[in-house]
Length: 165
Image (tube, rainbow, N blue to C red):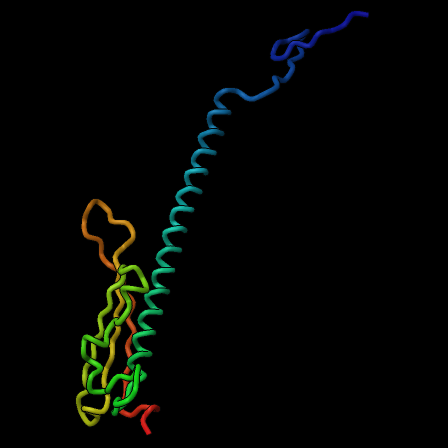
């Protein structure tokens, strides 16, 4: 009995055998596709990290704005002998806007407080208050000045407070 050897890719008495393995072209195409997918994942990760940083900064800015509004809400007509209360007539003074924000955040935020009297019947008894916290972008492109981000809170405060008796 004669042993028959198989020869891959060559004809043996009219029968063609299949070749095993991948061609160089197939391997190169698969490497290109894997590289494109990997670059897409890297870009996605960088984008997610940037969005997460922005979200954290936005939440911190919102906390600072809420803190400032709470300071303004703790107001009274007569502040003699009290600490932590702001007189209603003095809400617009710069001394009461952003006290301590530099120590808490590492100075990346700036605060702006806008206090205006309401016109009309309630003039002198109601004030419009707008607190704006702003900060610069994390990355500056092409050495140009980047636009800043901002969070604003607005409310109206009455002259009459729950702390007045």
